[in-house]
Length: 415
Picture 1: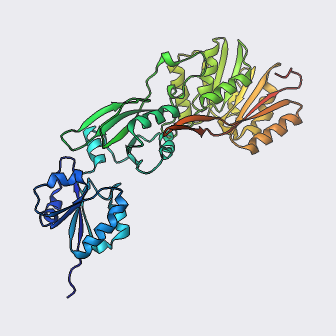
Picture 2 (picture 1 turned 90 degrees about the vertical axis):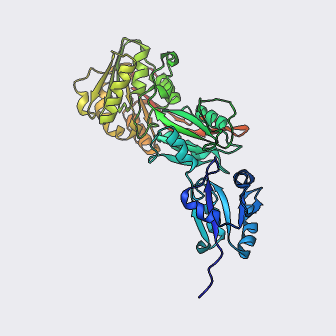
Picture 3 (picture 1 turned 30 degrees about the vertical axis):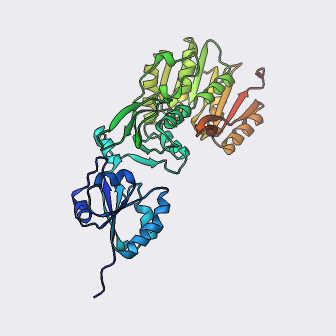
């Protein structure tokens, strides 16, 4: 019978030095104990020979291979070795039949249990040896719970600044959880843009919260994105503040009159228009049930009696509306070319039509139709990037490009 191969037992250790019950047998039988000094100190009275491991984790591999060739040993690791730990690296260098893992509760489990947050839907990211950029799509998607494992370079303070720079359409409540499981355990709230230092090791828990209205942040024009109700599963699906401002400029709004916002989405542009003058009658047309609800909620939030929500699809629902002085065609541009033969004749003298497009093809089709009818058309390609903190420097994060079209009948003076 072949002799049993030497085993590398990887035992997870909590911040207070405890191990799970299944990790006790291999630990009690260990003749060689390896691990970082911070974990070995919990086993100073253990009779096994101690091997302190310092430097990069990759540099431990040759020494562990050498020790394993001479006999079995126990490697101490933090929490669950196979959860953003050394486990994955070990499986690349050692035969699986020589590895055994005995996990302890992970820092992520501890943090979310301390905060009483169910974590089956959590998105978990590690910044160890990685850039902060991987966080951007997760934050913009509006994941309900995000846990970020930090490192000395990517600190909670740098994360707070990163989130502030993104100017998200959603808001997160954040906590820094430090030295979990140890007597020095600490859980502190983290504010956007905060520059405080926190004890290491730590992680950050982000929980999405419903944004509270803050009238002090409502300027005359250019409301911050996070002050609007948005789609729960697609919070980024809102006309961003810079695009709203350019759209308002292209509309050249009168002090009084009728405005149609067709494909209003969340109603962010309609809200901006209605707030500028109580003498403007704004009709937000939307066929999506969730969009209709969001427009109604945003109408209520900003107290706009001159904003009317029109449920249904254009052009069918346009028949009973008063003729417009201004028309905004949104929804990313899809279906706009089919609306033009109905919408264009309804525009009052001196009126302006503005459309936002996500694709060049729909913009081009609309442009050609309007010019064939003798309209004066101007198109602007809008590409906006926002500054974002990057380590000690600054980078720019681009927003999705938009084609902004302004069209005026040939009988009107071009603006």
